[in-house]
Image (cartoon, rainbow, N blue to C red; front, side):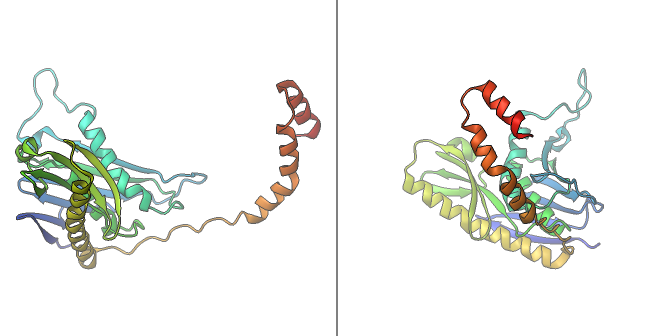
Length: 274
């Protein structure tokens, strides 16, 4: 599989999304780079469904490796430990825009695994992992309907900045992350120093302009290297069973819950049968 790469201009900074070089055995994978910060995201789904689930079995995991900053654990701790608070919150950051778009009938165990493999210690990798999560899903055989993307927005001296550095965030009166599709905002989180509602809406509009560019880049990458999608299982038709149960038990249940007193209700249940 050949490597394919697309680029997006984010306020003078180049963000690239590539696929086909790393994690080739995953259902879909993407490498997202901004400056010297690189996140690898791989998505895969089980081949057999889990019957009886009433939720999408999606797991999103974000991990920052110490080698990304040129450090190797040593001394007493020789291995990476459990996820930090930052890693847990970043995992949720990936999950929240993605989960609502997956068909509720999809009961195949699905994992989106994001690993920070390089850090320039200027740009945060959490939003890069969010973009990579979407890209890996739309490139894979998992029936993810459309790309999503996210950007971090800051504001310094009244000017909006997309994907600000840590130094710029120190001077910023706003730090928000906006995620969405080409047409809709799905998630907003962050904080600010008492900015006006008008300024916040302007920040959302600013973010959506960049989100649309990132979504278009992912769509181009899908055109170049996307896999055919697996079918979503059809929803079981239980209308006949539902009608039969309602006819047999609805009125009896309404009567039973109106009986005052726990013991009398129990007696009524036993006399009516279970």
